[in-house]
Amino acid sequence: MPTALITGITGQDGLYLAELLLGKGYEVHGIVRGQNNPKRDLVAEVVPEVTLHTGDLTDLSSLMRAMSATQPDEVYNLGAVSFVAYSWDNARVTTDVTGNGVLNMLEAVRLFCGSDPTRTRFYQASSSEMFGKVQEVPQRETTLLWPRSPYGVAKVFGHYMTINYRESYGMHASSGILFNHESPRRGPEFVTRKVSMAVARIALGLQDRIVMGNLDAQRDWGFAGDYVEGMWRMLQQPAGDDYVLATGETHSIRELLDIAFSHVGIEDWSDRVGQDPRFMRPAEVDQLIGDASKARDRLGWRPTVGFDELVHMMVDHDLSVLRAAR
Ligand code: GDP
Image (cartoon, rainbow, N blue to C red; front, side):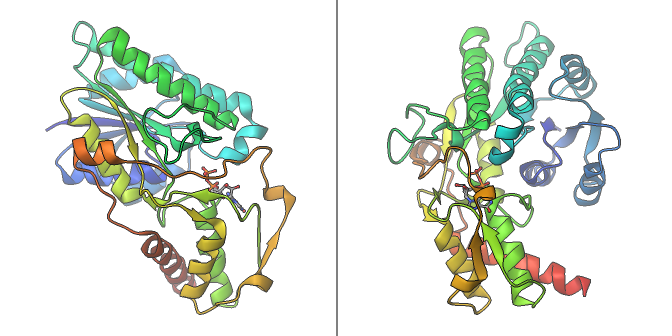
């Protein structure tokens, strides 16, 4: 039975990945940070078969202990301070966790592997935010990186460190450059879930309006369940590499609002949506659209959920949660 160790197990991707790996017969372990972390209960509820270990990406010895306790065949580094807007207010913490945390995890894997550098395969959760002020449309593995936030800068550090550990030590280390990926498990601070939750509340008469930031930004949004399949496929290749996972379609925040509101029968949402500078960012990533042809050709990976279907799934989920609570 192969063994996997996941950082960021309590997040959206960690939960989907744990389900995927358990379904494939893996023994799955996760690293959880902090004293009395309330998200431990979520993991125990969704994937009770997972064994949790206490550790922190900023604490190398805790990662080394988790490696020797679990002896993993595969490590998925999904842990990060992941909210771009927050990364300006806490740039140093974001750098320590989202950037230096990758170096710590790579170092823990390298030391564990000893004389056999491919003993444990490593996946780094890199991000389309690394493209930032895009230098090419669509963005691919070779596109020049131009991050536009402390989060993006930290992810660039992790991406290049992963490549360097692969090239310097011969490790099986892959960097998945994932474009935005969403689901009913997405945190409420991200725009898709913020919209799906608000639209569900508005449809049920529990709320009148939603206050947003920049409505013109465009993102390439896919379904998180599809993207964790791509992560796993990367680690099944003979050697580590870098891959973009994306849908190849881009949509604006306005289109997101159109689809979500019209799903609950509201065609004109102009009086339902306000804007507030509080939700604007010091620098914006205007248009992300990915070219996942390398992942398609080499991994046989394809997204299966379209944008409309994704938004409907999220709104329907939030409607059913609210109805159940009534
Ligand atoms: P990101 O791509 O990782 O930053 O994902 P988000 O879901 O946080 O943001 C996606 C885009 O939505 C960004 O361009 C934001 O500026 C834009 N946006 C507009 N209004 C909002 C809002 O109220 N909340 C968030 N999170 N993003 C917003």
